[in-house]
Figure 1 (spheres, one colour):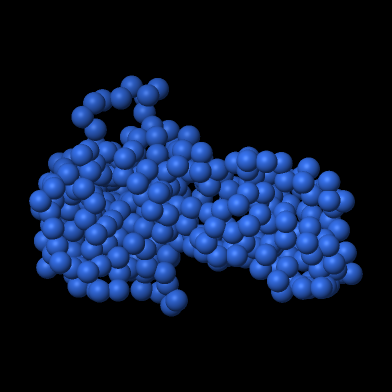
Figure 2 (cartoon, one colour):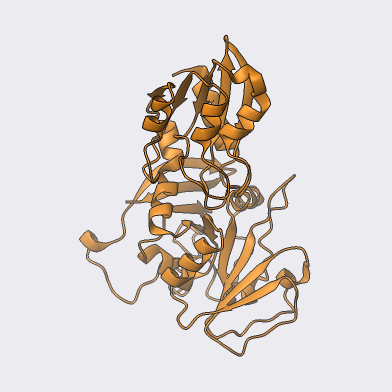
Length: 347
């Protein structure tokens, strides 16, 4: 693979998690063996990667090659089509790593009609980066990651509700990074009451996610720490039409039915492309049984808590046959100071 295409893919990976419902894209412009421009799509509504790179290259782009992690767009959205910008700058060749199956028109043909050579170089690393984006765009719901910290026997807390701290401080730092790569984090009212969490990143230059609380009853304690930061947005989904608050950063969203499907559809419309679920067994189990979970991140502490199954992270009313049980595949494993991190994808 070309080193320049690899640079474009690495740029895309660097901005993964900060582009909302848009894909992370990287681009590099090369002319006469020299990089003359590079760019990445930094956030939803901002210039696309190709435009950033071409704006940097200016006249030096003419006759050159542009390398892009994803096929350039052909439609008018919040910005004009990138194929137009490529044509205007006199680019001679376009090389990209992944075909965008969601585009309304064929970018290759538009560019070829303008006399530009187009080459699609399939790349598995880039394909993995965009797999969830394509699914989310087609279904109009965010990519969903469910995060669980638990004991070896799958407990999120003791029978007395004690949950701080099952995993170690190093895991906590890793979770901060996980939050940084998501647009929003969702939890339930029960977790708020028991843990009084803040769901911030607390890392250098960390991006705090929008905090989302699911409480069908609307019984919210607004004295908790989460509601004391005036700079961080909080959205509360509830079925209680009487729930009101004067806290400026809090928005109450009332739905007739707070189903996962309806909440996710609404979040996508609001620009949430990646959602992290950090909740107790009830909400966690609901997401894991649904068709909306893309990834499961498990942090195991080398402890056995025992007791009843009250705080088992996965609980169902029905007993599944093994053939019907939700299936996952392990895509990564890591030791974090005697704790185990497993990253799994829903099959």
